[in-house]
Length: 379
Image (cartoon, rainbow, N blue to C red; front, side, top):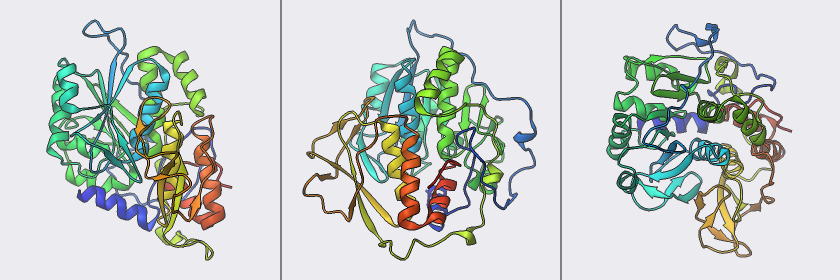
C-alpha cells in the first residue's frame, strides 16, 4: 500500500515519471534525478528477448492469465496486456480476479472472467504466463500466494510497471534482473536489495521472470510475448494493429523525468473536480477505453464515469466486461466525450491528450504524457 500511495502522490503532484512509450516518436527531455543503482541498461547493446514458448500439457496454444486485485488495479496496466494478447489470437487469454466480485480499475469497474480459485480448479497444471499489473496493495496475501503458486508450476511471471513490487514481494525477483517505473528507482533498491534492478530499459526478460517499465511499456512488452509465442512476423502485424512502430527493449527513461516545479495548474477556465462521461458500448476496444479513462484521470481534476445505454454489463471487443456507472440520457456529468474511435488503439491517447491540452492547458497535457510515458503529439 505504501508504494501505491507514493505512486498516487507522484501522479497528483504531476511528473517525476517516465519512459519511452512508443518507438519512433520524438523524445521529451527533462532533468535527471539519478537515485538508481549504478547499472544502466541503456549502455548495454544487447536487446532483451522473452524466451521462445515451449508447449506444455498438450496445449495447442499457451494459457495467459492477467490478474487483477478487486480493491484496486491500474486500468492501463491490466487492459493493455489483455487487449494485445487477446487480439493477437496466439494464446488463450483469461482475466482473473483475486476474489469474487467486481474489480475497481480507477476510474472504471470491470467484472473479470474468473477468480484465482476457479482458475486453479479448471487449470490445476497452471498458466503458461501470468501478467501482474500495478495494484493498490502489493502485499495482498491472496495475490502473492497465487503468483508464487503459478511460478511453482512453471509459468513465466510478467510484471507491469509497479506490479514489479508485488512480484518482488514474493521473492521471485531475488537474484534476477528486473525493472519497474522509474519513479521508484530509489526505494525499490532499498526495499528489495536482492533484486538486480535496472534502469533505462523498457522490459527485462530473465528466464521465467519478465518485468516492464512504467505504463505504456506494457504494450511493447506484450508484443514481445507475442513474438516469443508466434514469431516476429506475427508480432509485427499485431504491433501495426495497435499502432506502435516496434517493441524493442531499448529505452531511455531518464529523458522523461521532469522537474515537479514545472507542473502547471489547470487552465483558469477548467472547472476543478469536473465529472466526465465516457460513452461505452458493447464491442469497444479495451486498450482505447483504458488509455482514454486513465489519461483524463491523471490530470488530477477529472472524475471519469462509464456511460452506457443501460446499467447492464457490457462485453468489450476482446472479452473484458465493463460495468457502466451511469445511463445515457440521465447521466449527471459536466461533460460527455465523443464515442471511442474504432481504429488503432493508441490513437485514443492522442485524441485524449489533444483535448486535455485545450481544457487544462498544454503543460497539463505534457505532464499527463510524461506519466503515461508517451512522447506522441499532444495538440
